[in-house]
Length: 518
Image (cartoon, rainbow, N blue to C red; front, side, top):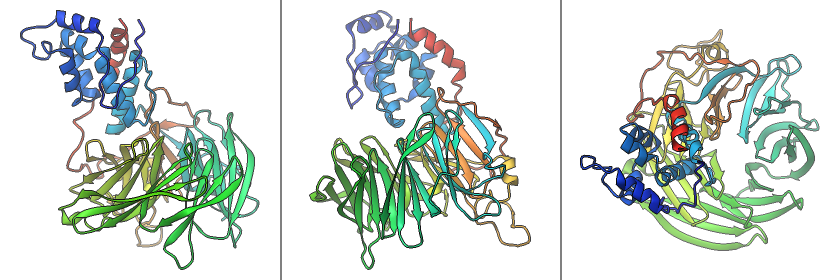
């Protein structure tokens, strides 16, 4: 029998079938507190459990297995799991629930399905030196140079098929950066006078078509792509306000839409409703004051403006937390998340839900620093509530879980072959590694990228790329890959709160799929 899920409300409750109630009530034991509870109460208790608790509960007894394999309970947990993964799918078969449970657990505990190490692919027989990377929809875009040349080139790599496009045409202009969405590749170019945006449509099998260009006389400070619109934030000489321009790729028209303050740390673009929402943060002694602006993308007019206090603060150590890092922002459908940082100890995670027009935040405090050197390429959003940040101090990955407000460091994640690559190590590593012929420590830092399926660790000038695959249904067989052999005993230390230990999904995966369908 194939079991599918119905609609679940936002509070996690679903319709409980009367047959399920009768079947579970028939097996109640006077010595089993959980087994003697009505199913409605068990569903309420499940709100405090995660997927690991559910799977472990199924192993207690046959009775508990019947209870915690109930469709209503499984779909309740699955609903929350899909939300963490940033997935809007609700019609998922029960036999596939274990895939998402294992996926979610792997993201939280930095335990991917598979880790591989591979060299960057050659270009004309030469090893590239990679400078910038962007990842989206199983494609990796990167900017690189070749030995003996200062010319920056762009490449696009489809991890699903292994196909690559190199030496993408830039019309002999200087390549500064790239942006990548599920449909478009944007090259940010410069001819020495103006900034030129070059947009390509991405098609499968991997190919680029319909190139378009726009020239801007002002320097670009930020840029993002949402569906068929490119949002361009430019610098205005002598002003702290940044004009916002929107390039509609369907009509090929550029429209001026309001301004962005230097205090703006979060914005959300909804291309379907032609609306741009920006937030400006003002810190005072005990509260965070927020100004929310809504701009129409149709006529560029200000639709609504309101001021409110987001939260009271009584911890003076958190005051003045107003530093944002360009690039630490990611959208998931109608939600956008961003992070503000004060130092290596404190992080503020901000989420805006456009569907309900709600702004929320979560503090993540650490007893020891994650990283004092902050850069956009050191942070990877692997979901709206799970962020991976590279930490130089431990040569590993810090997993920030905003659902629990905790940070866990998983040290010693670099492969020895990466260590031996001359330019790979991060700034001021925990052991003496010096530039050849000098006494100065290396100032390179690791670069990370990723989404819910894939996490990657490389770095400026590195020759190797480490890939972690979390989705059990997406583990591509890329050429020239080898297992990762991490360096051990650099710094076997974790921050204040860590996960409760490894859990072996493989042991339970097969039996779960068979039993749940009976």
